[in-house]
Length: 103
Image (cartoon, rainbow, N blue to C red; front, side):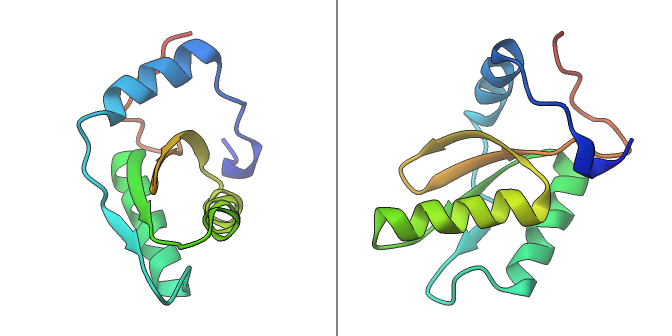
């Protein structure tokens, strides 16, 4: 499976992932320096290991936060599950599938 060709998540799958993400703590924090290569590497490592992660995006402006989230999704090839406040729940299937999605 090529990671750039992920099929979009269905409503059922998004609801399922939201419920799984509910108890997660953010594993990556994006602070004053923004989205650096190191931060992106951490996000990719966490996605490979967990498939579903939360990222805390600290940005003063809503537009800045949206731009950072869009960049994370594009560069990690992850899929947005949910954004609440400064927290992004992000999913990307790994080669070693850990989360079995409902159909």
